[in-house]
Length: 150
Image (cartoon, rainbow, N blue to C red; front, side):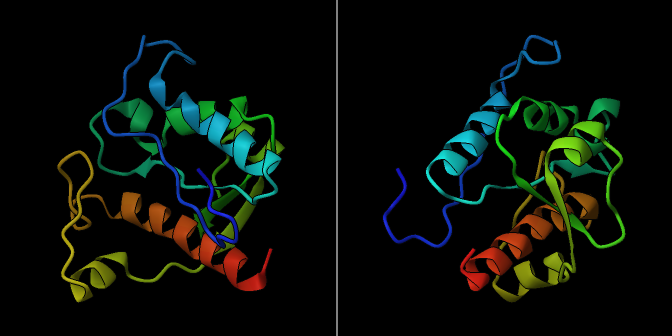
């Protein structure tokens, strides 16, 4: 539920995906519905791109095939944040959504400063810095939108 007056609401696909090994047969496709619902409610959806430089699966290196499929399936326009200088060439993103390049702080240092240990698929920020940098880009973009009132 979206609380009235909220500046930012964070939603994400839950951990552990179920899939059929087809382009659109995976539970994370719910990201498209979240984008559409946020836009229909007057919000500005910001999508965190799942990006990895360390995943053993080729389809999850670079921009994940799941991110690309979810953005392709979204009917509404979303802001897709990318670290400055790393704009992807994935067609569904560039064609239908607003790519925003942002400066991303050192995510590993921020986590350490707040005594937080976070991993993705068992990989730390040191093991897969790209994942954390791209996730951080979404946080920066959301903060900028909230700060601008837009």
